[in-house]
Image 1 (tube, helix red, strand yellow):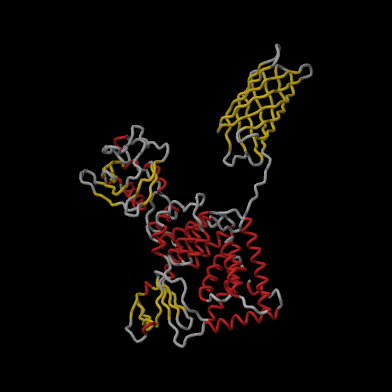
Image 2 (cartoon, rainbow, N blue to C red):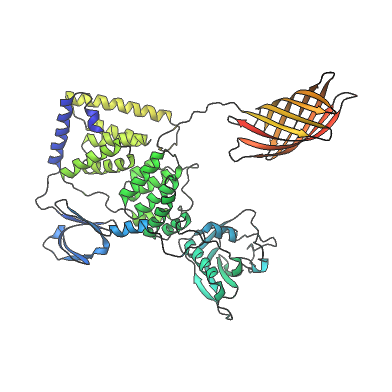
Length: 613
């Protein structure tokens, strides 16, 4: 991509620039007469060494910094890859990771946390110090059928001063409490067997196992709740724990694996989910995060490119893109792709654990300090090739690596800027192109290059000026103008009364968020006579209740009558708020001494056009 840009002036100048860059790279990165072997460990650390022997179970080596020193050894199971001085590679433990990514888990299924929360009537989260914390009460929750207040899920609590307990209605109010243990006992015994609860995964697994083996126990399980004023106990009927097991590949289970730091299990669980739903952007983003936690950065970046190629602008996608770059050691890229705000929040399920996971699994040395010139040029070409194929996240990471190794060459900064611009990371793109301009020389040919790059810089600044403040990178970057659209509705229905029937249509315009003014047109048959109706009316909606009124002029062959129309009824909208089914009670009061008064039940459908106020 970059080389094609420099060809815009003339072919000979481009070839000269390319060969000059290659020669300069070779001069900057001469191969050492004694190059080191690199042992890449599974924890993402790198040992610079001279490998002495590769055995069946271990690898023996000398430290490169002390070739005359002792021989060290490391178990093969702790090694991901060896890169020898001549560029050859030996991979270890890759087949295990690939196998885990495609084979379903054999662990027994257990109920999802969402179900457990519904059953307890609270929102739960793992506490870093151990246990499951009660963070909020679910609104409107009531105890399930068959559980009395005395045998409630959290039981009958000891009353402390200022300590809320289970009410008569069965509502739960122990916000801030910590579920630490669940106890069970065998049939006929009185002694409790307490099971320690350290996280939400423990809780769901334990409840499932209790229900699965309920015939072994008496019909009661006990729960310990730790509160600032002490610990209290409660009980629950095991027969009420009618848990519906979820599939091994559920998202809740995959998340629990991440939270409990079982990264390989999480990778396998997400692989099963993606197999069935390969275009779910949030699912792909979480899987990329799991892969990056496992040190499989190339696969993580591939997942991210899949998300961004779909064209979904999602805060979660931005967050996990930033987390992947942070785990790779690219903090500046992480800060570019994610900016916390009132609108953009860290996903709730990972918010309490993200910093701990980043600290534990972050790559300690993202790039080697030196590289061969051949490897550098190959990476530069590959980064351009990835960008030309619209695999921008992979391209960005590779350009970053090249720049870290060769910070004084302008060409990588240009390619870096282009890839960043394509993802909408315009501020970082601007910084990169400015750096490229600063590195160009002062010859006549250099001035031509600088002029071209300054033109690109001006274009990027122009884009930045059109984007609202606080907008994060998005691919593709979409700015939807606030175009005013017609705010109208149309209704068609009919009514049937004791002595009258009618067909009615209505075209309305919204004059406020909940009210519309309408023009009415219809026909009515009453006492053997046919009428044509024209009118004006106003309707107001409050949730599913609609009321309205207006004037209706009804004409037949012999008479014309003015009616006062009143309507009240029920209107059920669809989820997208584009249509509704309406049932009205209509009253038409004739304005005249001999005018009729009619009642009718009308049923119809409304269609809504444009953006409602």
